[in-house]
Figure 1 (cartoon, one colour):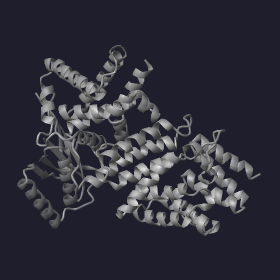
Figure 2 (cartoon, chains in turn yellow, cyan):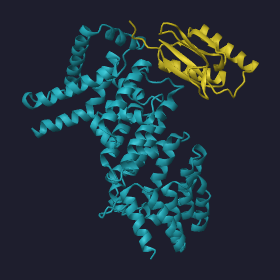
Figure 3 (tube, chains in turn red, purple):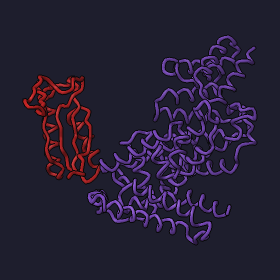
Figure 4 (cartoon, helix red, strand yellow):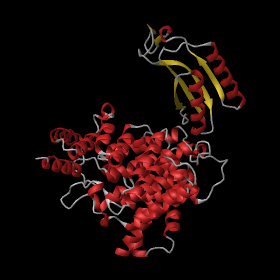
Length: 111
Length: 407
């Protein structure tokens, strides 16, 4: 079972070197314990481009899909046998990256 | 016929949680468990009057519910093969199927999972563990049945999609998870005891009784847990005073003015025994155990003037260290007023003005102390504020009479 751990950023915390080290150590632990799928941080929302390719010509708009004070700063995809394990990992993730996170399951019923 | 009805009602109380817990464990799906259990009870209602009550109603209901669940799975399989896959994915196969007690605990911990909103936990627990119907739960919390149904459905979808497991939390998580369960039971109890609806009865016995029933069930499942015992004792010692708490004219009667002969001695004895058991354990008490001990001090006094206020204050001092909420501080101040004098009590109360300006009990307490100190005008203003903020009809009636008596 995979879960998305989204990092909720409000732009007030600037990433410190010590923080990155803590995140890396956490990531190592995720790998060692078999929870690791993927994780990375995102560039700031201002660098985003919204693309709508549904028409004949794709339409591009500069900036993020949603303008808001809080935005997605990065994410983990973790593997966990059930929710309580994922919840514990999400709490640790929040602690090491010093931000709130949102824990959300991937949908399993896919064709 | 009435015997059969009684047997069905009794089975509903005693067997519902067991039947749902077994099905949830076996099929890994709360929705299916709930529906199959409801179908089995409906079958009992249809069959028992003619066929007679089976010798082991619990086993009969479990077997019937099991068959209903399998029937439903077969029906759905024809339509949707993926369904079965989801059920299999969902179960946690590494754990052996435990005793029935464990199954019920798993169900309780799942319904009271802290990742669900408190009101959702309450609704889900009353439905899955308590066996109340959706309209009954909706009535209890004064919401539309449709809205309550949706709340429960959304919770079941989340439990399933997020794989919230049926498991008893491990030792490390247990205290936090137990307190999540206790918060649910305490909320149900308080909604019954301090009913907030303008049109509901001031005390709703069906809710206090249900909360006590669930707390007794939990106590049976976790006999070693001090806070579980503490909450049960607190409920029993509060419920014991129920008959004395509202007068014949529908007015709230404060503790100091209650007819103590009307208190329920059996509930008091049970509550006192639990408090003594916790004291004898020698372990540091949690919040509910301290509240239960305070209730035990009050119910041990035959007359209000016999109350050991020094014990009450000492217990509140202990509680303040665990819970820094201004409401705890207010209750402590009330005991201080009785022990050390009304002026000191009033000064202690008024230090909480900033935090409790919107809380009716703050104004009611001030009004009472001011009245007893002879400050009529100030007391009247405080009564007005308290009445304005009170939703409970019996409490309004009491406060209004007190205000009128100021002349």
